[in-house]
Amino acid sequence: MLDAQQIAEIREMKEGWLVPHLAPTRAALDCDEEIREWWIDDESPRFIILIAKHHEHPEQDPQVASTALVAATAALEQRFREQAEKWGRETAHMSSPLQKMMHPSYQAILGMSAESPQNKREIIRFMLKDLKTSYREWSLALSYLTQQNPIHPKDYGKTDKIIAAWINWGEGQGLV
Amino acid sequence: MILFRSAAEARSQLHPAFPNLSNARWSIRSPFDTGYQCIAWAACRTDRVWWPWDHPNFYWPPEFGRHPVNSAVPVEDFVQVFEQKFGYRTCTSADFEFGYQKVAIYSDALGATHMARQRLLSPGWLSKLGIQEDIVHGELDDINCVTYGSASHYMKRSWWTALCKLCLFRGVWESIKFGLYRTVVRWDLK
Image (cartoon, rainbow over all chains, first blue to last red):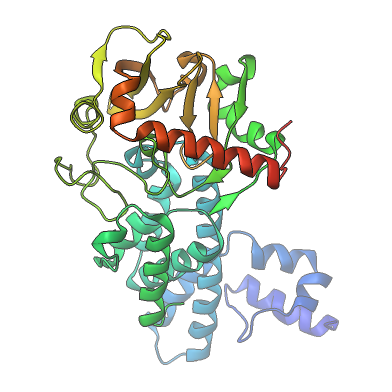
């Protein structure tokens, strides 16, 4: 449990649009509703601004930017998961891949990957991770984002083989 | 990936997508299976996803042309394959005719969206709903919806042609397999 002074320090950072060197602990999140909302809700814009500030002033403590990047990645994964689940749920009955690709959530995910090279790499990593645990079909998106084709021609159309090929490819690239 | 979803869970996903199913008689025949979709199922296959896109995600008979990814596929592409490879001929009615097997192609403004295959020995249609379950539904209109549009093209072939193309054997084998699933796994289909 944090004491009153520690909570006051975190509040001060919040007001100054700064992040602590380390993310608030679970104890802080549990004990103070205001801090919890600040940290969890709508955090992406804050971190984007922080990263931008870091690039403007690299002499500032690099740990700040590093922490912000870790948190921004977590926020990106959360956005990815929300859109991926929506996409999977709302397109499972579709047979036309064109209709699946036109779904707003699919476009939103591709949009996230276009925000920065770092985001693109992370989105590829999230897709590979998701392939292992869900029924969602990321092969079209992966081939678009990576410009790679790890699938043997004899396995074209075979979902299980396609997933295995992409996971092998991801392992080779150090992404999974 | 194969999932044995309960009928209640399947209904909760299918009814919003296919409003007409709420008032129709239909039943689940197979588990949820990502390994094939409606076009493959219309061709009596359950081992690949069929679509005429030039991408490793999809199988398409190599003797037929493919379209680039992101392009709409006209109904004619499916008609061509089902005519030349499986012996179907275009017909004007979706009614059950003893001695014939029929398929229906659904389409919307962008092209083909879905295919259903008629049951062999009795009226009714078999549809694989994307990666979700195969269902049997009484009428083609039962699965009309925003994404499928409606059935716009019908084709038929004789049982003899189906026999020669091995589709009868495959269809019977898949029915046996799904029957075994239902018996052995005993997942909730009520």
